[in-house]
Length: 165
Image 1 (tube, helix red, strand yellow):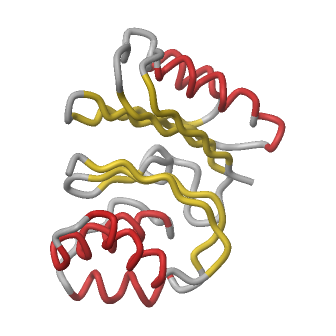
Image 2 (cartoon, one colour):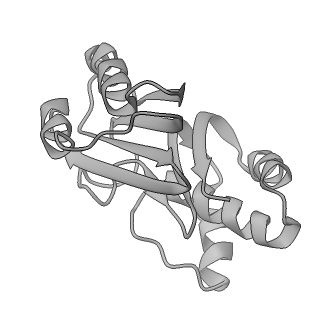
């Protein structure tokens, strides 16, 4: 089962997220990733295999002062255990992590493909970030767009999303 962790505050986000993900290791996972929003920019890292691989990739990354961070350990339900399928997934201005299953992702993905959206992964999660961004563009309001996105997703899940807007 996937695990998600989030943080809002002034502490070092990398350490908080990695420590939180370490607490979830007992669930099993095939990849892990983090994304941090600080000063209007989002930085993300992904790694397959053990959490140590992600820790090594992020060893030089720091994020003190106010910011938002999200972290994820993935247990494959859609797609092979690759970095492309690891979370977080992103669109043009948003990053998302997700635990659970979006049962109607195929229908939503087909609609988004018809709109010209390009997908990088085989996951149901990536559908949610692209749908959110489509809704932001139509509604001009991130909170309303997130509400509309969640209303369109069928299944049992939890989502953390960060957005530059």
